[in-house]
Length: 318
Image (cartoon, rainbow, N blue to C red; front, side, top):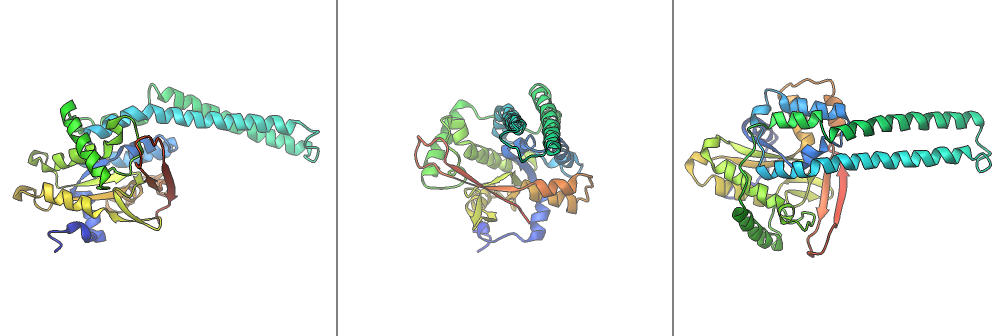
């Protein structure tokens, strides 16, 4: 039974850890973009783990993950700048408000001075961070590290005809709620709307190619959507069995590809395994594991006109 329906049989913990040693590791675009949402020292810690001897040679990236990352990365940096601008605006309003002594006569002058001092220090820190982010639009250590890390490790792009074929397949699969991708946020751009199926097809093709010496795919995500994972009561249970079964059936159809496996894992879980199984030591590892959290995302494609119907529930992995 398990041979024919492997996706219905959960992997043992030992086997999951073995996959990080055997499989090709694919980081989804949300993991890459998360690096620009972390503190610089936390992002640097994550990158250093990826650069470790145990991991770096296992990394590979479907072309369209790299494409979406490059399309979104400056937008993400600008979004962080906008957040800081919003904070600065609120701080300025707060500072002006507490100066109005007639409105707040119950505040002692000493307390007002202390509040103004705190506001001033926070504003100064925010301004420095905004300047750093603005410079990173042109030159970023994280960008440079990722460029070097994935040099020569990116798959071939699909041509226009191949993309159109995937779009047609995706439309049928999404209508039938067949994973992956049917829970994607709607986009008028088909290449983004059907991104998940594009990279799925690219991972299948990579694993099928015997020249790549791929022993399986470990797909690492920053967001857990129900079209990649089983999510029950806000808890990620396992990889969707349909994906495992499809991967096994298509990739293992020849004897040379026998026993290749597919599995999804959160970025936090990957970091935990790198630290424990590979004995990788980094002073920021403990904090990185504490702040990484898996976002469970529910989205819907009920109507083509739907621009954004996405709910994100942060769930901290224990």
